[in-house]
Image (cartoon, rainbow, N blue to C red; front, side, top):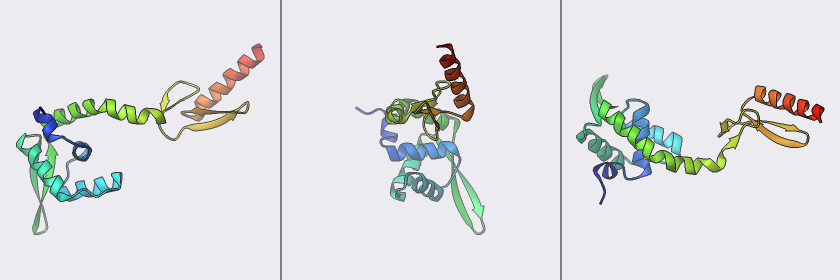
Length: 151
């Protein structure tokens, strides 16, 4: 049996909409646009607005009417309760995300920091090494030189 939180956040689309709301208060159209920009797929208003209504009923978001010219736009803000809910969901999904990202993580040869994207690369003694920055690469080369001179 699903608990209340699971029924509100039942798939990735809703999860990502929650991420977008957590980043900043926004309106339905902007949610749709940001989703499309980042994920590359459209999300329908028939999914967005019922999800927002569920969040509002649970008091996870509050609605602010903003007057733009003659029109009013609905801007949605996460409440403190909503932020706690989002953080709980982020924690729950972090293991899944770690599993998905882990195969793409490299380790800096200099300091051991985990690198996801944009590693600095150098070929040293014919072998490609990845670094977080040029400074780690320099320190690594100096250490290799020191170790080589010792032998």
